[in-house]
Image (cartoon, rainbow, N blue to C red; front, side, top):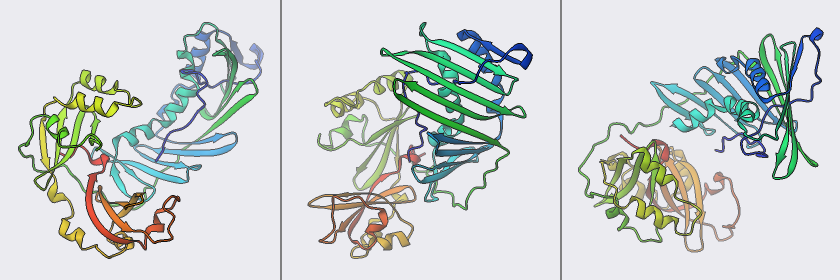
Length: 394
């Protein structure tokens, strides 16, 4: 799922709320300012307390077409991505952060939860407060507050020699922000966005079953001392599967028929150096292998017994993909080639590789919904990898 709110990146740090509203006078209760410092102070005062509401809904429009809605109800959320055609929920249980996907599967997902919680703040930052972080003496600011119910802000400047104007109008009713209208104009191009806010909205979670937990698994002695010993097992044309999250390096490998998770806690300096590796370079894979080679392994977990036994997986030979679905699997991807065809299916947050027999007249170069594979005959099912959301297992 792509859960980002897209806003035109005309200036690297400067997308704001600005407005075409006219300036008032002292008799009408309006005030107009024309310096960056005064405009920032006026904006801060207008939005004071805006992010404190426990129940708030934001509907986002782009060029008058609805893009998404975000509803927050305390620690529960419902996000609808209208253009993309899916939705998801977020909630907290026993201190852990979870996401209910559009298929109504539940997964522990702190990153998605935190990003979703921050969506409204992100809109405010990208469209309003972030504008004042720009350090460009040529940028001009004008702001006016009309009776405390309407904030107009206009910012003008240049980006790579091209003049631009950002105008926004922010409105309040009964002391609460109800709308932010933003327009960016540069030359003949214009981009408009509109955010509408309502309050007192509740979120009712759909029925769900908590996912299987992987937090009490057996810790065993590692057969390796450093990650280089694992790297040396894999040919260079094989992807060395690893992940770094929350300063923990995780590698999954198989040793003597056992599935093992190797992990190490990295210090901030090491993570910073790792993040500097350039993914776009031709030798990125070699850079990663060299960087991780001599890092010592801290912990090893044997999660083999959490998987579906291979004997049971072998029982799917000759059956159809729909038989997997009937037993709780979910198709999550596919790869079709000239010599082999693979479907990926998840169960209990573990991904299994399903080799299938594709009908002779099936166009392997086409794009399909996953239910198009239901009648495919299964040739083999094997464990592939854990879902990233459950890593590191404990």
